Image (tube, rainbow, N blue to C red):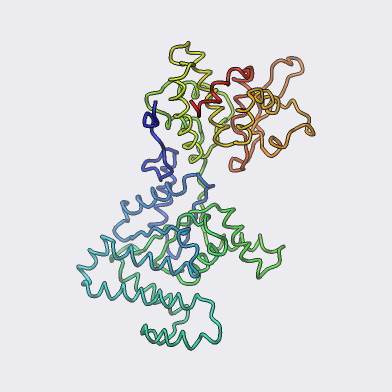
Length: 447
């Protein structure tokens, strides 16, 4: 069966909320629309946690909510401009572009006149050029050249930072739709800040603080808080001792972002995973959902990783139906076992390539994996390809019933890399599997 037989899930933001974050997005949208600016809000999530999707849902609620008439939104993909010497300039230029395409601004033009609107946009351009000049590192011999450049651009009088802020604030306020009882504002969504190099991330945050701390600007920063703190710390090492750096970086971010929301991981990863399996294949959905009842989490609680795993599982399951295994022609129990075995193979293939290569080369590697996840090795016997990984659960043996064991959580940090999430299946439902059970499954990619 060809690849078109199953749907491929991409990494684009989802249009609907499949992670139970509807109430949270409403809360953030309401604060962005009503709280008194200047204001910076943070949306924290690990890579793949769904920050972009969440922020787009917030943006939609801001644009279509009860306070939407006095708000204009701007979207800024920070990582696209990480090579800019003054990233705040790229942000101002993006604001200018999106202002000029705003339907609300076009309606505002009917009141102010198109000439006035264009003059205000041009003024924003001029202010952006000045910010760029002030943001560049300047040597003494270049001062005269910069002065001549300012004259050519009709910006003879250099503005101090307060003057720049005042002019920017006035230009933005005039462009925003008027409102009698509400504070008109621009809500600026800055996405993928944690994908930028540390110096750029720090420069952009400094630019927001220096130039855009305005009474009509609200910022929503999508970020991995730990990554951004480390980026700030790395940039600050030039000015502070190592002992102070981490504390200074944390305090810097706390001062900039007065409110931070932490996106919760999927409470039931198996549910999110099975919703991305082929609609026509109910057998694996039933098997996985039934197994999850009463079992510890055995899939990574990360939406991006779950979608990637679902893509591979769909591919493998489609090939299995056309293989000698023929799961649809066997008993329900066998189909359930095959569905779980495919999940283990797909998981190891997708996230632990070193283990998969060993396993495909020698199916008896399964026994070593089972010994490892079930704690049968002394600490000094664990091979290097296992020691770098984290087991999310452990098997506790009852001395009175040595043949039985309870699976207990090791309470791993869900965002930690290298967690072998699939371990509970090899500790429980599939603990009695033999290498021969997987020989054909390990060759599915070549089937």
